[in-house]
Amino acid sequence: MEHKAECACGRVSIVVDGDPVRVLMCHCDYCQKRTGNVFQVSCWYPHDRVLALNGETKIFNDSPNSIGVNYEFCLNCGSTVHWTFDNIPQVRGIAVGCFVDKTFPKPEIDIQTQYRHQWVPPVEGVTSYEGFPPPDGLMKDL
Image (tube, rainbow, N blue to C red; front, top):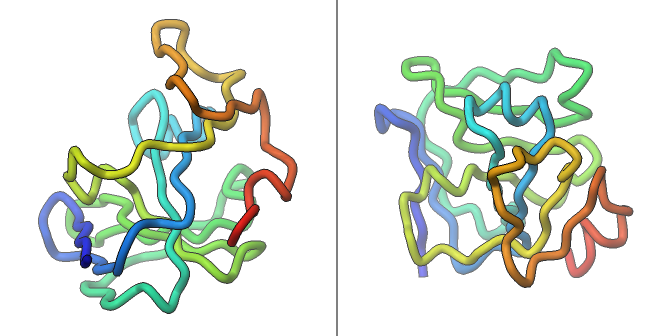
């Protein structure tokens, strides 16, 4: 089954096949600033399951907090739709909110909970890490 994620103005989109290999929440201060929200939810797809990348983006990775992540922003509306990782080259990250799909799989990993706002409850059944998880926890089954 195909899924399409797009930016707020619709000029940037990505089409993927099937379910993601990872869905995670991040509460770190950088993700809060980058998204303008109290946490971000992302999913990862192997490159061979990315069917289409549409629209012109600008890459932002000029922050000490981006830790090798190349965020791709829409030049028109500024939404971050997708990104690549220097240290996890086999997948592309996608902002789950850009799918606008209430049936999308819930996160299985919750990271940087040391920054979680006190009024945001933990998600039941999700493995949580106060900081970054060990590589085998984050990249298991990729």
